[in-house]
Length: 216
Image 1 (cartoon, helix red, strand yellow):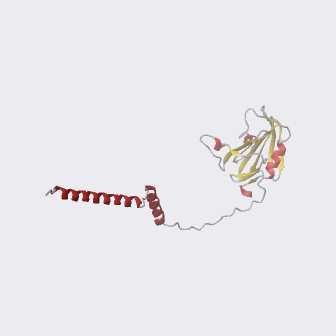
Image 2 (cartoon, one colour; image 1 turned 90 degrees about the horizontal axis):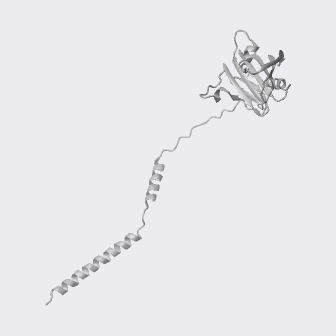
Image 3 (cartoon, one colour; image 1 turned 180 degrees about the vertical axis):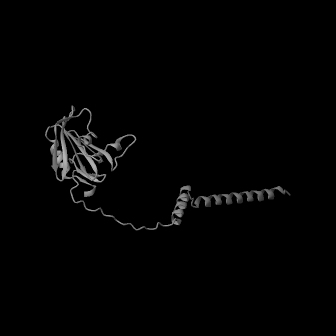
C-alpha cells in the first residue's frame, strides 16, 4: 500500500485552502475604504478648530469728529494752526523728508509745496521778546533771493502782515514773502509764481483762512 498518495492529497488540500483564504483577505482589503493622509490632516485641523475658544465680542464706541466751522478745501491744519493754500498744492513737512527725518514741532517747522506754476513755503518759530519781520523772513529766504522794493505793512483780517516782493533767478522768477505773529509764534510765508503781481493775492487767500491755536 502506498502511504505517500494520501499525504500528498492532504498537503494539496491545505495549500488550496491557504490560497483561498489569502485571496479572500486581499479582496476584503481592497474593498475596504482607504483613508488618505490628507483626510486625516483635515480631520485633525477640524477637531482643533472646534475645540478652540470662541472670541469674546468687545463693545466699540464710535467717536464722531467735531464739525469744522470753515471749508477744508485748500486748507492745511496741523501743529495747532491752519492756513489757506491753492487747492492743487499739497503742503509737506520739509523736515520729515530728510534722512534721518526731523519732523516739525509746535515750536518750529517748515512746510513746502510745489507744482509746475507755483512754489510755496511756510515756516514758524516761537516768538522772541521783539518781533523783527526781516529776521523772521530769513528762516526761509535763500541767499540768492533778493527783496524787491520796500517792505509793506498791511492789515489783513486782524493780523499785521509785513510783505515784501521777492525775485529769484529761476524758472519762477516772481514772488513775495510775508511775516506776522499769532499766539506767541512768528509765521513766515513765501511763494514764487511765473507772473509778477500774483503773490500778494495768494497771500491774501492764505491769511483769510489762517487760524492759530488760540482761535481753533
